[in-house]
Length: 268
Length: 286
Image 1 (tube, rainbow over the protein chains, first blue to last red):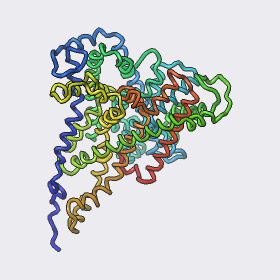
Image 2: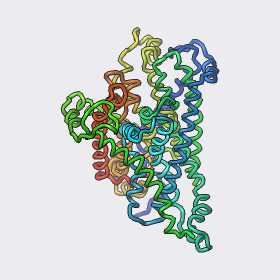
Image 3: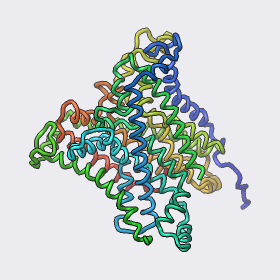
Image 4: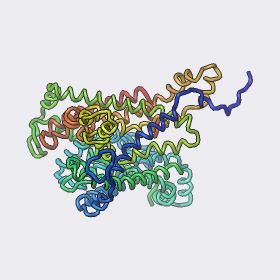
């Protein structure tokens, strides 16, 4: 039997299924609503009717004067930064413990860090709600941040677990042979190697929290996060364009952060 | 000096404690509240008389059960649609996009990085009576009156949530397809299988774990949805999650709401256990 050239590209261009067209059509449908929001934020009216009559930058100018909205955005930044930091630390500790040690409860710890991913948000919302009722902690940004830490932990753990499992444990053995204590080894050998991944895990957790609403609705007190604020204002059609303008500004930020996180992960 | 082994409690201890306190205990509290007699906004201080009355009430109220069934059916529909739409995209990225696959995947994922609420709002704007689709239809002379049924309906919820999840849905399928050994396809070709036979008998079976992972990763967040139904669903489009939220806000009945949340939790965990029996999800890491 004669060998066929192995470079032959199996399946490529063999069927007449217009896959490229399907992909491009999908991209178009995915970007269209976002484009419409963009247009809406520059639209002079408060309803979206085509053809657009006049364009304006007024809504963006009004963003600056809208105190409650800016406060909500600041709250989201605080909650996101706090919960991302906690979730990233938890993820790093779990990854190190699980990958570098064998101990009783190892599987349980890993499962516990991943399980929040498969609990519906409404159930998590109820769970946190009852916890803060039980310990008599008034609902506030702190309760939202604690809830978001749990929501973000699976993401932070899985991202860091993937990177650490690719690091050779021999590096740590070498450091300890040279006299470093294990904590010093973690700090001076493992952490620097994990650096970009830790940042990617933090950014991903931050975005998960920044965008989260279903759990937050159960947990906010008088001080809303931005999604909760936006959700509460939706009924007022007059205020919608300013909210959308603000959301578009924040969107540019979160998309940029996501791309940075993606890049940090793929570079390794 | 702290040895390697001595470090372990400091590594495993804090996360274990944190997760026990803020994840396990809260879930146990749902169970505790759901098995407690009484109704209303009952705090921890009140009497704790064990009772299964709330479960009896849920299973004895056809409206609740109907809504649970409808929510599961809606989530199954959304997860199925998202998986079917994402499959050809993942196939294209794996087998046809060549060296540009990473760029094309990133382009697909950017909309997923846009705030969830913002994407739902976009559909609210487009579907509304004053919205983009209606004014476009009228502008083109296709209709003279705004179509009322676009917004505030179950189809509106389905369209919106499929839109929200499709970019993400391609990821697990793409990961599974990337792991398909091309030599299997070569072998099938050498043995005389045509393109369709290779697709159905090699590619599909080997990518099925990814497709199932996608299905569940869309189903789980969707079955408990209440935000999208509240924004675009109207009274016809509400889901089980909206009722749960209601029992913790307007019509406070914490024990009954806890029982409903518990039923949803058990149902979801059962489905995940079933899924793990069908397919080893560890093989489809993201």
